[in-house]
Image (cartoon, rainbow, N blue to C red):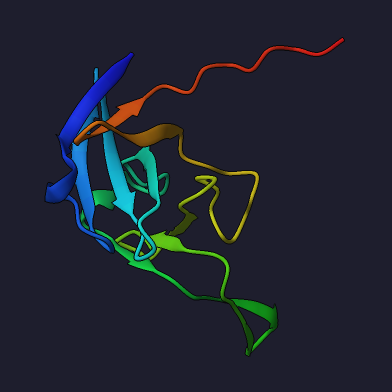
Length: 125
């Protein structure tokens, strides 16, 4: 299943946009560098609207209590309700990588941004 989200000029670098992929609400993120990512738009915590969240380019993680380390290669989407943070590339929560929202393929096709369900890769023997 695939869905046209918008014309590519409607989603600038650093912006996010909500769309639907069938019955699934999806948030599409265009990073400041121009890459596209798509995640389910409902927070795992209490269903907060991730499309109203913010994307942060640099994420601080805790090494020890009270000690933060900057992780410059990790962009996160932060839920506006209670601050849950999701890695936009994987959909994993920052605090527990075993918990994740569903991710989707997002890409430009001609002059449009498209989202689709990821297809399973071929198995290797």
